Length: 178
Image (tube, rainbow, N blue to C red):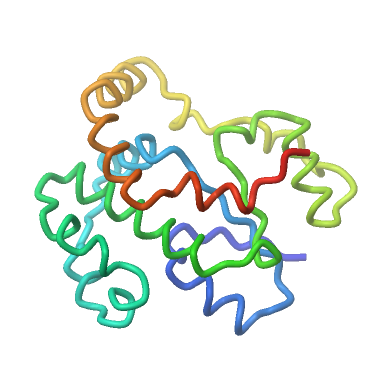
């Protein structure tokens, strides 16, 4: 068994599935506000022009959103669009049998994680330390205060953008209620 963590391959999942049909894909989705905050804190660049210049991607998935994407001017809105695009395209292209969708914020719950391992055909969690959410995600001291301020200031904008893509509805087809 191999585990490959790839956080920038969302737009390549269909290709991965087609070229490596036997691998298990665990797709972890994280709260968009936390993702945008993290990417900005870590100095990630975002180039929406690169995305909208891909004619096939726009034709297949992004045409209804193109004017909104082009109007993004702030770093926060650009990152929110990038999160939305990455997750929208992935969830639209994948079938339920293709991926195991995992909600990042639930990874600290033993029952939830055991269910994931069961779906993957694994008997139990090999290392309970995976139940610990990273300190960057939890936040500490000033970082936590900054994150809370960021959430207060930008959550409505990020939520508005992600709701354009209806990500939560797309997620529902992958989430079982067991």
